[in-house]
View 1 (spheres, helix red, strand yellow):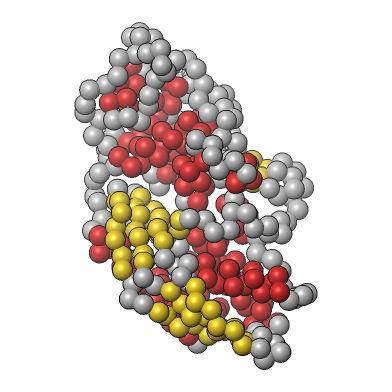
View 2 (cartoon, rainbow, N blue to C red):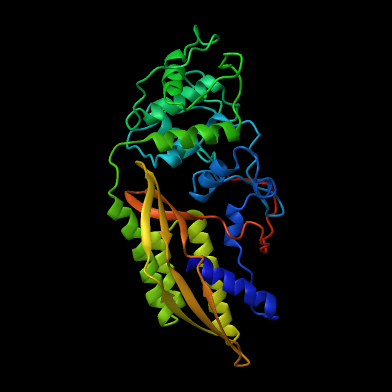
Length: 366
């Protein structure tokens, strides 16, 4: 239903010169140009997951285009932020006061939380070096510290010839024992080497998928998906589009929230300003299956559900079309103690052009 709304609205924008209708633009914040244009990049899928889920935010250029920059070296501050966001961390204890991380620095809160929880340390007692590229040994240590309560790191570790005397050997051993990190073909780990955004994304996703405590029941996950679907359908039957926004706020985040709110913005413009009318009929008996579930991430497959959508144009022309794009994989994330839908596979609008607001200067949003 969600993709149905947006696909029909965009099709109508193409068919009619609707001067009062503005193109959707929230989704552009979740479609990094460099991954959309290079979907075969080895880290494209994992980085898109992190971006969809509001964990990684990328870089917005002056023209409004979003870039993931997978091969760019990642900073210590960026890693701290990714870990705090992905694990939804908070702390009532004060963090360390680093002289190079003043209040107002974009990652101040995340570094405060991460240092209070013992996930990160400074390079000295007073300096954190937030913009310095993180080393592979530092990254391994931060990840293991972050996931020590939810991932079982027991197991045989890899034996790297260049980590025997490093301070991070214990962390590297633990991370390699569960496949979060791998070495190079020559049996080395290169602990002093720097990590890229792509490499960090891969390690973070691997760790999230290994979490195995406080697992949700399958009914909890499937009910979330179908309850959202039914709540949306109830409002569509009465064309109460404005009532959809609080439903989306309750059930969705990230890319999925942007997609459904963009579609609703368009439907409101089409019905209230241009004279279009729509009716929706649910077809089929939905079937659902939990594909995977972890402590904070889950995937639910929804099938056998489509909608007959009847469009009445301003000139009274009537068309009915069946759309089955509701079916597919739903990606869920635990946020603030509640499961939310953050994406649906496959992305259906990765190559659609949306208007982008002008941004006066380079804005790093990590």
